[in-house]
Image (cartoon, rainbow, N blue to C red; front, side):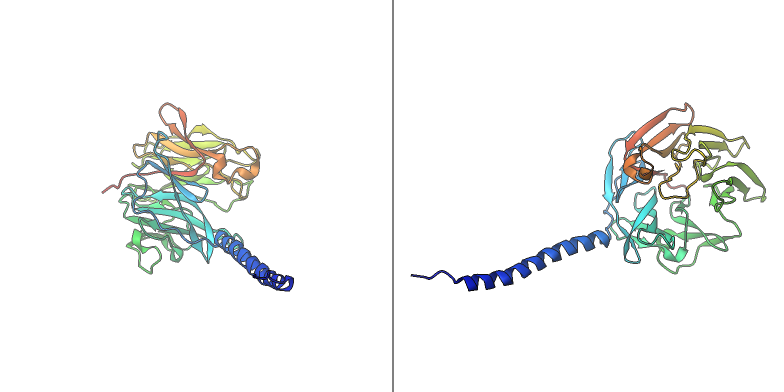
Length: 336
């Protein structure tokens, strides 16, 4: 008859098993922690969802039509210096093949390193570090090139130049800002480093004759597709101005600073202050932007506490498209 193992042998067995089990558990937890801290980059789908609007949500790029239909979410992880990066301001080409985002290393706020990154369909994201700091992606009207602001002026690059040493196709010497799609005008903010108590001014530069006009106080200007209208975030909301007619700006959306009444809407000097930034529909009849819907100031930066709205320019009707998103961009078709 078999004898049961002695107590000393059982004790020895437990002395071996306990460290082994602990090691396995710690290894599993450690791997999960490392994957959270340093997640792998995500490959773009072979085909992006074909919708009107793209936007930012938590760890994903959102896709939705202007009527709120066909919402879809595609996870995106971009890495800078080995760390996962926050990403803002998605811009997608009309052929639905190339997505640009602005990224900032989420573990390196001290150095404030902001770059563009490109996500081609079916590929991993590529950082455009050779272009240095960029405020936002500026697609050319042909959707095959992108404008980059350099020390010499605006430079026009092919989309595939991101992450390479390719030379620009053209450089507009001593011209800085955001060009209109028809390349008749350029808009810039004359003092982006102004303090909270100083105003920033929207200035339009005529590229043909060099004339300039200050149209209003604000930031984050955006051109309509025909280059005739400009929208921007003003002190107390969103404004539009007919540049072609030289008209005065008019407020179309009332949106006071939801966090501090003493500061203008466009003022962003803390991570929780996220001003609404507008994008035009291709036909120039609608604006799209995000509104904060939270109750605590620290949720301003969280897409879950923001909703995306559209505004009919002619009627002034404001309609919510979807909850849980920021930085909406309305896709345009390519122009010849």
